[in-house]
Length: 269
Image (cartoon, rainbow, N blue to C red; front, side):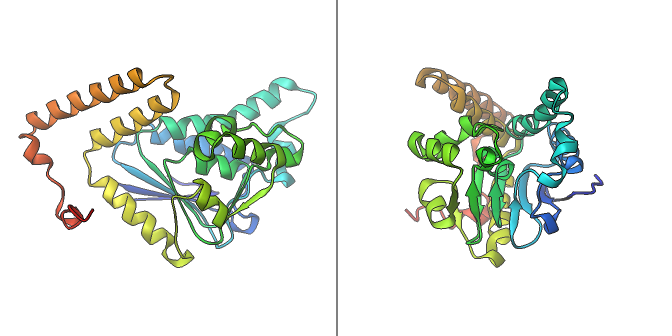
């Protein structure tokens, strides 16, 4: 895949997606918007890629949101409501495809995650961050609504109702210490170690059964949307039955023993 604003490298089942506009803190312009839609659409069926690590180029920005210098060309004529709607859908489609793709997504947040950048981080399955990371629901700061690109869906599930309301209504910046405390960052690592730690986690995921990875992400998605415990348990039961049957067909449950790299961790707790 050749891109102008993205870099993608696939090695041994792990794909690294880098937003590549460092001079603009990896802000989204019209080209990046189109390329991100193409990229995630391709991921929906790229089964040789088992895990995606998403990060930003440079030392200051994961993704600073919409590039306001190019915003007019992306939203179209403000008089034309249909053009605005189609442009808005290009943003929301990215979020939907991130959750629909079979690969777990690890966001390695190396700097500012503002607006759309925050949405990308929230749509990932795991968020790792450097001390330079900061988060902001900046949608409302540019005059649009604070509920955008899945923010009203994901944010309160991650940080709680009250904090989500505060972030969406005030648009204030959340520095890394607070972000870690409220769950916007699973772990914080020094900048020079961030990608190493992200790749280490990706390799642990990639060692698992491809089918198990896909079905676990699917179950997480259904759990996010389920209104009750019974439906969630039924999905988990279905997945486990299918996976256990596939293990027996492949040679029995013993064939699923932990890889050597993880045996040393067993029993530590």
